[in-house]
Amino acid sequence: MSTTTVKTTAPADQPPKSPAAPRGVRRGENSRRTSVVSHGILIVASLIALFPVVWLVFLSLGPDKDDYLHPGGIWGKMSLDNYTFVLQQTKFFDWLTSTLIVTLGTTLIGVVIAATTGYAVSRMRFPGYKKFMWVLLVTQMFPVAVLMVPMYQILSKLQLVDSYLGLILVYCTTTVPYCAWLMKGYFDTIPFEIDEAGRVDGLSPFGTFARLILPLAKPGLAVAAFYSFLTAFGEVAFASTFMLSDTKYTFAVGLQTFVSEHDAQRNLMAATAVLIAIPVSAFFYFVQKNLVTGLTAGGTKG
Image (cartoon, rainbow, N blue to C red; front, side):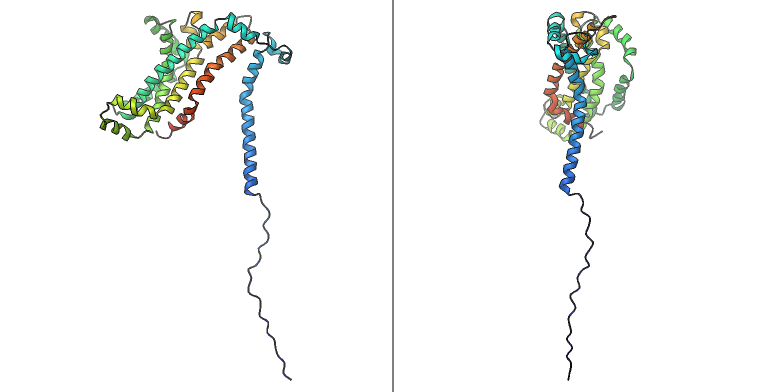
């Protein structure tokens, strides 16, 4: 009797099963957590930045000069009396007129000088052009106290003390060096081929600058204008020294009239400060579209 051996085929080789990986954080969950954290940080930073402004507005609604010592009592007696007093009983509108004349004059003259200077250094290779830009930086190293006396003597000889033009020229000495460096860096990012195309079309160097280059440099001009405006708007030392008539005070100097040797009307100062912020906010609104672009583009090329 014969026996039959049945051979069974071995199963095909199968790859060994890897141990199950621990469950990690999904990509969606990770991005969601990152978004929540970043938004939380931005909200906290925004609240920190807004708190001084909100606090100033809150104090301006307190009718008494000592309400800042007990801010909790303002809730029951809020009023607009401080704003009414500032607008009707002070020289607020004279300060507004002086401030607008000085700031807009500084912005216009300063930006024109800075733009032409930056373009000349960016495009023209005259002897000493590099040293010239460093000289502009050196002028920013001197403190205000050192410059006060010689500037006063110069303005006195030119009969520009207590005049808007004299204060505008003083502010230009501060804004032009920085803005010239800013505009030079921005003009460096504009290709030279545009200047060559202007010459081929028969434009003069000034025509090329005015008709071709300046339209492309609007972001840089916006930053220069914003810096010049803020510098002239908030400066105190030069304005309080060179402007002798109280009707020619700027806002920054006008605020000092609420502080005397033995008294300080902080409620009126708060209300005036809130009103002062309106022109700056309006100016920022007009230049904000080009502000970020101008701040970053000028640093892309040395």
